[in-house]
Picture 1 (cartoon, helix red, strand yellow):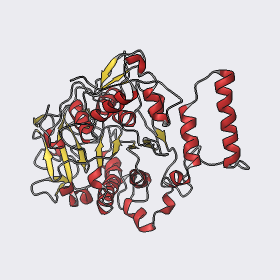
Picture 2 (tube, helix red, strand yellow):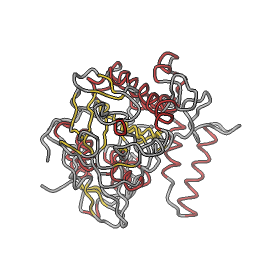
Picture 3 (cartoon, helix red, strand yellow):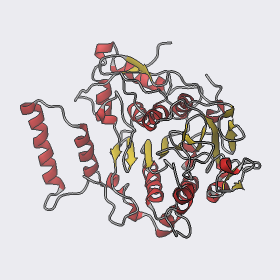
Picture 4 (cartoon, one colour):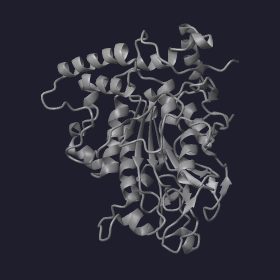
Length: 443
């Protein structure tokens, strides 16, 4: 069976800008428009209808400690188990860190993956592997899951197909068109004056004047400078012109109780914004949470947040509140079954505390948590050994995880995309579907 193939170019006669970028060179590769549409349909064709309409990726940048979060070792020596205890959860026999009581209460809605394993322990390299499913290459920049989703699953709405809060960090579109790069919100959703940059009018400039300016610029690009239209500018104009799209970013429309449920700090309000966006049909939202590179002062960084904080407002308590609120809120609104939520970072931390009271990089085994979007709930997939040093059961590579995510999103991992020079690249070449995550037999 011939694999569906997509190329990147532009054709102003196509109504959708995103489709235009995909259809422009079809004739070059021997595809008519009907053939392309059939190929795109087959790209999402797997052994079952995907449930995940949207995906929220909570990216814990820097490498969260599996031992202090999702895979505690209460029976291990103190230098391994660290400063925190383990607590029981809603799943009999499953323990999580004492810093995650709210997540423990909703564990029956989650899948805990405890056997991720990678050979890459440097941030940039590991980030690329976890987000693309490909180990980094000096000759090609692979697109991340969010960009692939935006490219193959355009929503056709005024809202962008990939939105990053507050920014995309190391995630990018790789060899794909800039039109599928993240729309970055910028700013801090926890601040009262939070606004999306570039979507507010300058003083004395209204929509009519802005549209005239945009029309003039379009004419200038086409007839004078012969420069291609900036897709980011088109995207911004579409958002400015659509009041309902702009309102998607307005957290002031949420009641006080809901905002407090997520927590009043940046990560919590970012998760709330992510919920608002998928509720309005955005296919992929990333929340980029920084600061998880905890080489020292575990207790201060992970639990307390700052000296004298009471209660602790460290990284894990803030994550715990926001993550549990997000899963519960999606469930309450009937959105969890169609929204895949993933929380992970690029690797874990060393199985022994270092001399600075922290843990260093450790890619040999680490954890992630998934919920919704068709992932079977209330289970633990894989295991690490007794000190959290190596996989003991069901090792899962980043390529395997990415392959499984694509399956849940209805993207055939065998689908071929093309680089600017015509080189065919599979969406996912080396991964296999993890049956416990997708409900399908591994390939």
